[in-house]
Image (cartoon, rainbow, N blue to C red; front, side, top):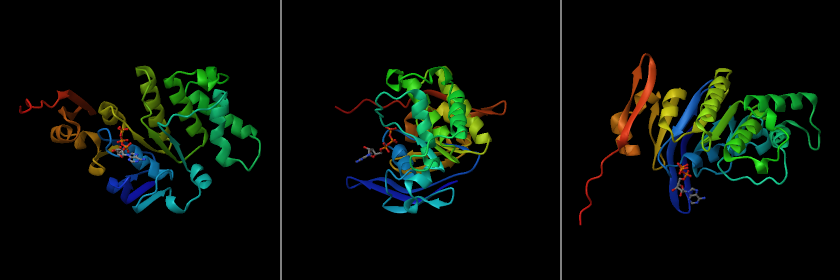
Length: 262
Ligand SMILES: Nc1ncnc2c1ncn2[C@@H]1O[C@H](COP(=O)(O)OP(=O)(O)OP(=O)(O)O)[C@@H](O)[C@H]1O
């Protein structure tokens, strides 16, 4: 559903992504992990045309992103971003209803079917009780869920989420991850960035590890997150292993850095 080959992105004269290959299949939760500044957000931005690769090709559900109009793309791919969004005086349900725009004709009002889909997105994100609230009055975590609900209302085949568990309390972190797992098992391709590697191990079918703009490993999380990779890329001591058939990640702390020379 997502196919990126040889992607290179240069920003301000520096290579932010080099030779990135990522493929995400239908029905898969795919995690993009890596330290701060490794290029995760920039890669996601290439998928919805916010960043144009300097080399390589990106396809979403068979559509070449470079030659596909935003509206056509938005009927296939929905994204939630980390960028602050300022929406003056809109209610939660009005924001979620924006997800239907790519499916409507110009100035065409929402149909009963669209309203049903918006209602389902609110239920899926536990926001039905907040439907009439002004988004400006919501907490960071609630706004995160609104963004996910709007993406779901797009009824995409591919869902791309930048740190969807950011700002969420523990219950809602697992709520969102369980929801994404359920959506993937219904056939959606889900690509997300994550900082919590335990979530990556527990929820992702596969991950790609980005380090300084390059993919250094791709595969099942428990196989990829070796002690050596955790130390080299993330600077932590730990390992992933399988306990009672379930992958588990142990992290014991930061890699000790020796005393700095005077
Ligand atoms: N518009 C831009 N112009 C110049 N450099 C940029 C721009 N956007 C991002 N960068 C740089 O590209 C690199 C990768 O940034 P990116 O946001 O993709 O990383 P990330 O892995 O998502 O980081 P984080 O985990 O901190 O969110 C960083 O060094 C960043 O400073």
